[in-house]
Image (cartoon, rainbow, N blue to C red; front, side, top):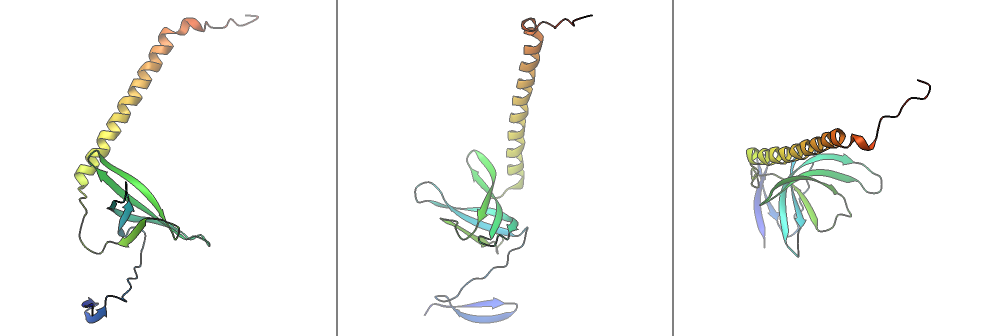
Length: 147
């Protein structure tokens, strides 16, 4: 027999793990773990948080913001989890496992990405100003009729 003793609100219970079913109550802001199928048949667990609920009559959906981290940095993504979600599981995070979430490292990555995009915007603005200053001969000012 596969039985285990668990404690719920100070009460110890012996549970048959073969028939036990876990029921979670999720609220906006709760921490969750998202398991997604990656390349080939590899599954990866990502930290996330419940961002909202869409109570559609035919397909109620939980919106989850999750963090996908790899060697190149971290990306914030959204999962729309419902009964049609394939190769995806979501559970409430009930332990203190942070799944390699380092706030400073993630913010540093976002700061780098922001700086990169700001540099691209600066380059576009400089190019625009150069164009306006040096190509104005192609569009001479129009002379007003009757002036």
